[in-house]
Image (cartoon, rainbow, N blue to C red):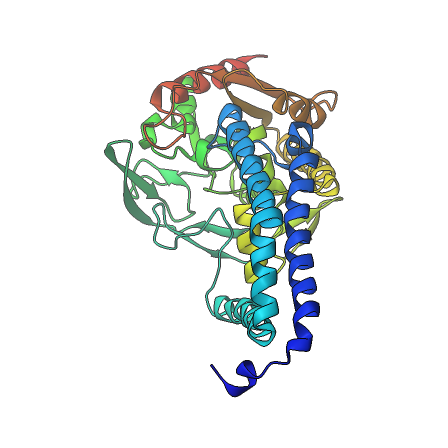
Length: 384
């Protein structure tokens, strides 16, 4: 120990103890207050439904976290506080140095993380199949003109892309923009994650309708990204028959992300917002959404879906929004869907599928689910 630390004036001890105990007690008290304030109603408002976890699992996790916060708060307030106080009184300079070291460590962590490029949460791994590449307007797209393979659900699935970056049966069978075509937009569910090309919803609908399908979906896309890609690609097609887009309440949270190119209300395009690295990691671990952010997301999602319908109709294509639901809607999902879709004149079909119809160990719809979804979509498109 340095001479400075050994010779710390004892007169500082009472003040150091008071400051240390007050700080620890404040942290413990804040945890207890948060535990009491964050009841299930509050949690449902600020933590949105998630695709990979059922409501039962989500509520169970939230309950566990609340109990852990309460236990930690009690531990800090009644057990750790006096011990920290005694330590600070016995070595005030050392306690101060420890606090300073912790603060400096956070700053150093931020600087180190700034040297590492962090992608949005929907694109964390650069070598994950299907492989993605940067796109200044959309955030990312699939790497075109290549074939990739992924082991998923106990089998190896092939993902092939033509020169336009659409998923196809094989690289040698590109989508022909001159033919009558049904276009599909969305994210990994519409893309067919974990499914072969012929098992995917776009391929099955195309086969049922006797039309070519064009799969424009990209893993991790929000509704705004899907619309932007449609707006870019639709003019390439000479005879678009229909445009099928997707919306899921369990993926609505993506529409609130701003760490990628995104829309503000009024469909004003904005580039990705650069957050601090520690803040980004905190948001990934604790996906809290403010009331203002949720309301803004609802507004933008409505506008995006209306724009999707409008751009399809302007080309003479039948617009349809596929709303996919695993099992019955829960008390959080239903009002969210109704606020975004009901009473807006948007043409949508709600498809409820068995929650068990998922790719093993993955969570995406399996081949059985995709077939059921495709049947409903084809039937709706056949209506006069």
